[in-house]
Length: 177
Image (cartoon, rainbow, N blue to C red):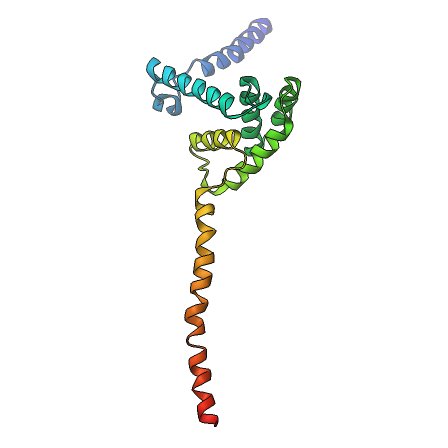
């Protein structure tokens, strides 16, 4: 009897795991629409175009497809604070003879775009990484536009402040005489 009880218990424990794995799809999975072949082809074409653009824009090994793919992946992982995985990818990046300075410059560029990256939309991060990979000296549009207006606003602000200041100081001096 004990043998049957032990075998029955083992069967129940083993089948519980099987039922848990073969259950109905979760609500997360049900909400996702299957991607069509056209969408997959369009995405693959976009990626291929990005590699071609990088090869044309960057001279040297940083423009090689393997360096572009691994380097952008390292920068993305660093941005998401997955440093262990980023360092493992960086080892591969180095083994392909890719320049480590380009990863540093790209990450520095990405930090300048930090306020414009929406963490909920993966495409914004990927597009910013691509822009910074192609041109590590890129500046965010808002920051570039914000820098000149303070200079004009700074020169315009003292003019109104200067007009009221001389008027009150001019009025008391004639009264004093």
